Image: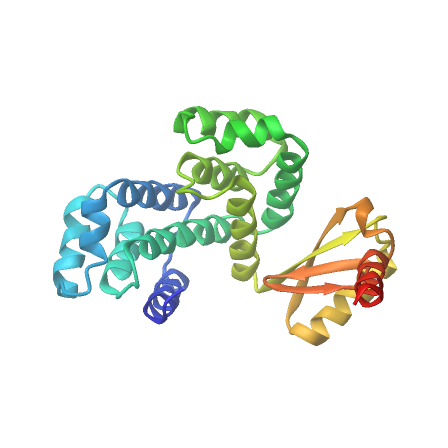
Amino acid sequence: MGSATTQALAASTDALAAASALTLDSAAELFAAARAIGDSGQLSGALADPSAPAEARTALVDGVFAGASAPVRALLTAVAAQRWSSASDLVDGVEELAIRAAAIASTGVDLSGELFGFSRVVAANPELELALGSRLGDADAKGALVERVLGASAAPATVLIVSSLVRRPRERRVRQLLSRAIRIVSAQDGRTVATVYTAAPLNAAQETRLRDALAGRYGGEISINQVIDSTVVGGLRVQIADDVIDGSISARLADLRQKLAS
C-alpha cells in the first residue's frame, strides 16, 4: 500500500466515522459502487487520476452516482477527493468502506466470527471453494450460492459481505477475501484478530490467558479464531496479520532437525 493510499484510506475512513444514517442498504450501495468502478477502467482511472483536479473527480462522482443515497454519495465524493496510489487501491478503498458500513449497521452481531466460520467451511469444501473462486463462474450465480449456503444461519450483513466479495474477487482467492473482510470488521470494532492453530481446542481458561498475553504484546482488544490442525502436534501457532508466533512441538522438532543437519 503506497503512502498516498494510506492517507486516502485514513481520510475516507474518517468520513465514514462522521457519516450518519448508515444502514445495511448503504453498505450494499457501496459494494455496488465498488463493482461499478472496478468494472470500468475508464471510470476508475479518472477517479484515481492524480493530475485531475479534485473538483473534477468529485463532479464525476456526482454525475455517475446521482441515484445513490445522500450518505453514500457523500462518502464516494470523499473518496474521489483523495489521491490514491492506483485505481485498484481506490476500488479497494470503496470496498473497505462497504465492509465497515455493514459492521456499523450490525451492532451486536459477531460478524468476524461468522465470516471466520464461513472461511472454515470453504477450507473444508474444495468444491465450494472452486465454485466461488472460478474465474469462469457467473457473478450473480456465485452470490446466490453464498446466500443458499449461509441462508438463515448468518446475519444479513455477513451474507451481504460474502456474496458481494465473491461477485467480483479481482484476482483474489476466496479465503483471502474472507481474511481481509475479517480484519476490516475487527478493526472497525477496535479489535485485533489472532488466528490460533492448535491440535486440540483451547479451554476457556487457556483462551483467556492467551488473549491477555497477546493484548499485552499488541495492545487493545484481541479476537481469537481457533483452527484445529493436527500437524501442530502440541503447543500452538498464532498469526496476527504478518506476525507468526510458533510455539508448536512440530516447529521445535523442525528447528532441531535443521540444526542437526547443518
